[in-house]
Image 1 (tube, rainbow, N blue to C red):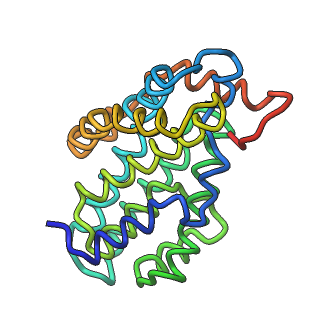
Image 2 (cartoon, rainbow, N blue to C red):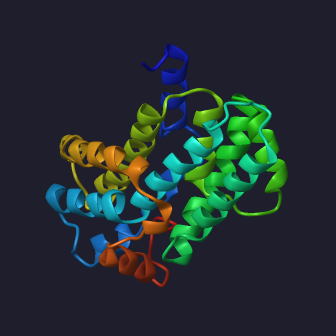
Length: 236
């Protein structure tokens, strides 16, 4: 069961109002809209599904689960050298596991912002220790999110559900603005993504990072195209 406190934290951390700059990223969606590949609610659902089920969102889901389980492994708030080393290895993999410069920027900038804001508003020694070890180095959004959830005791499954839903909802919001779509179409798209999110949450914790990969080539190409797009509203 998710406690009221854990639920409140998850709602805060995955809310569009949490100041990590999520609204400024589209994960290549802007280029896909310009190319005509995303033009309505159905094609928006296809695009977001590709991101979260077999693209960058899938990578984040698997590494989120692994980072969470690594930190929760011994349950000691002050941590251990072995656990810290394991967490840092996952963090380094997450930073590197992006297919384009802009999606890397997306993950790293949001990760650094999430870490700073959460340390201020929801402090925990584990966050401070992680920040000290990674001072001056990039950190991935999914890893600091997983660490915050694990350290503050939010259960893995609802935490991962909230995280992937937040990713999907942010992309739907970008699609509503870019296509453009009506707000009702946006909510229909969100509803249609629910079973995709459920499937990702069920599979991610059982996936070994050694077997991790992506198969969302058009999403990656859209992101690469966005880097040289003449006029754009989003940073990725």
